[in-house]
Length: 113
Length: 114
Image (cartoon, rainbow over all chains, first blue to last red; front, side):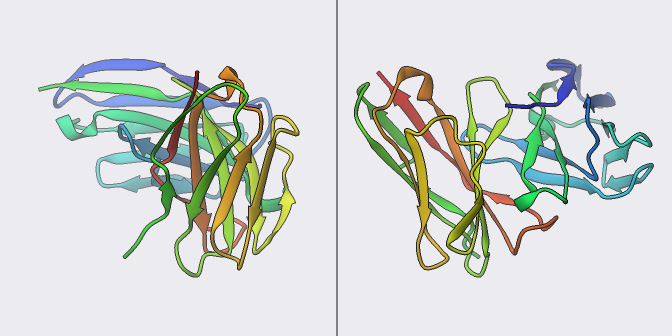
């Protein structure tokens, strides 16, 4: 099925460093979402973006909805060990029936203390 | 409060057998979604329910896959004549309604087809 292009696939950083990951799509979305998934669990929503150009923060997380509606990025500042996990972007097109989510392939984040 | 629950958490089956996966959504959520996550991949949409009807089943990969929802609550995903490529984690999500209401995910069922 269709997936978004998410990069990087994995990141290994030191505690305290900032992290950036992004997603691009060949088609537009009118909602962008960022999720975190821990092992053995389902994804948990971190940030939702509803307007092109929107910049939203949630604690140490900041995400932006690209102006073309085909991309988004997520920044994590001052990383801590509990930030470890897989981060997924997801696009949603509300006009489609049911508003299914289209996911990126994930960014595996490892934080070394 | 109770989140989305799924059962079983793990299922190992032999190729050719049928399997049923169950999802209990959050109480009061009318929208229910099934996704599939292959190893190291993102989630792939399978089917969406609004109440008991499925207006979008376009993500089901073949006619071996089917799903139903009864009483506007519990949903069952059935895979007939399982194949090894069906091995994946099957995730269920529910939301208050469709649209852009947040989808809350269950922990998933890990299916292994030998």
